[in-house]
Amino acid sequence: MAHNADTDNNQDRRLYTLSSEQPAKAVAKMGTPLIAGMMIMVLYNLTDTFFIGLLRDDYQLAAVNLAYPVMMITIALSNMVGTGASTLIARCLGAGETDKARHALTTGIALTAATGVAVTIIGLLLLDPIIHGLGAKDNTSLYTRQYVGILLIGTIFTMGNYTLGQLLRGEGSVKYSMLGMVCGTILNIALDPVFIFAAGLEVRGAAIATIISNAAGMALSLWVYAGGRAVLRPAGRLVRKSDASDHTSTGAIVREIYRVGIPAALETLLTSAAYIVCNNLAVAYGELTVAAMGISQKILSFGNYVYQGFAAGVQPIMGYSFGARDYRRMLQVLKAGVLIVSGTELAIMAVCGIFAPHLIGLFTGSGEVIAAGSQALRALMCILPFVGATSMCRMSFQAMGKPMHALSITLVRQLILYIPLLLLMDHAFGFSGLIWAQPITEVIMMAASISLLVRVIRTLQRLDTGGNHV
Image 1 (cartoon, rainbow, N blue to C red):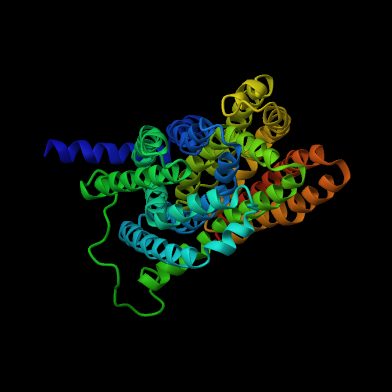
Image 2: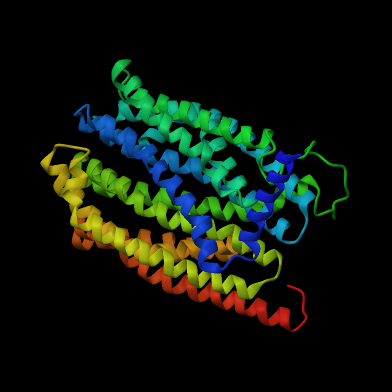
C-alpha cells in the first residue's frame, strides 16, 4: 500500500507541474532534466566522432559526419509517432480523458515497432543510392556504407529509445523520459573504445556500439512501463470495436497521431535535407571541410539540446493547458520560456565563440580542419539566442493539436528562407556565405513565430471568453 501511495503522490506532483506550477518554475522543472539528459545525449554523437578521430583518419571522420542525416531521418520518424502520441496524451490528461490517453500510448508503441522494421528493410534495399545521396565520394564511400548499414539494421532500437522517452514526457514523467537515453549514452561511451579499438572494427565498431546502447535504453523505458512507475500504463488491447465516429477508436487515435506527427517529422526531414545540401556545397571546398563542418555541427548540438530541452519541456505544459482551456497560462508559459531559453543560449554562444579553436582541436590535429571548423562554429553559434524561441513556438502548436501552424513555421524556415539563402550566399560569398545563411534565417523566424503563436492564443482566449467552443 505504501508503494501505491508513493506512486499516486508522484503522479499528482507531475500533473500539478503541468496544470498549476508558477510558469518560470514549471518551465525550469520540466526543461532542466531534459537538458541534463540531452547534454549527455550529445555525447552519443560526439563519442563516435571523438573515438573515430583518435584513429587519425580524417576520411573515416568525414564518413561519420556524412552519415548524420540518416540518424536525423530515423529521429524524424520517431518524432512523427512520439510527438503525435505524446501531445495527444497531454491534451487527453488535461481534458480528463485517461482511457483515451492510455489508448494513445499503446498505439504509439505499436506504430514505433512497425515503422522501425519497415525502415530497416527499405533502407538496406536502397543502401547504395542512400550513400551516393549523402555526398560520399571515393575516399569516404566505403566507410559511410559500413556505418550507415549497421545503423539501419538497428533502426527499431533507435526509434524505440527515442519515442518511448517522448511518450513518458507527454504525461509529465520527465525524469523517467530521459532514463533510457542517458543510460544508453553512458553505455555507448563505454562500448565505443571496445569495438573501435579492441575489436579492431573502427567505424563499424562505432555503429555497433550505438545500436547496442539504444537497445539497452529502449529496454529501460519498457521497464518503467512494465513496473507501473509511469502515470499511464499501456492498454490491455490495441484494437477496439467501435463506430467510425468514435474519437477513442484505434483508427481515430492513429489519425490524430499522424495529423500532428507528420508535420513534426517534416521539420526533422527538412532539416536533414538542408544538412545534406550544406554538406554537398561544403564538398566543393574539400572533403576535410566536410569534416570541419561536421565537428562544428556536433559541438553546436550542445546549444541545440538546450533549446530543444526547454521547448520539449514546455510542450506538455502547453498541451495540458490547452486541453484545460487555460489560455492565460499558455501566454505566461510562452513568455517565461522564451526569456529563459534566449538568456541561456546567449551565454553558451559567448563561451563557444571564445574557445572555438580549442573545442575543434579536441577532435582533430589537422590545422586545416581546426581553422575551417572554428570559422564555422563561431558563425553557427549565432543562431542560438534566436532559434530556441522558434522551436518553442513550433512545439507549442504541436501540443495544441494545430499541426498546420507548426508546419508553416517549418516550411518558411527551411524551404523559403534557409535553403535558398544557403545557395545564394554560397554562390555570392563562398564559405563565409555558407555558414552565415542559418543565423540570418533564425533572426527572421524568431520574430515571425512568436507573433503567430501569440495571435492564435489570444484569438482562442477571446472566443472562449465569448462562450464559443474552440
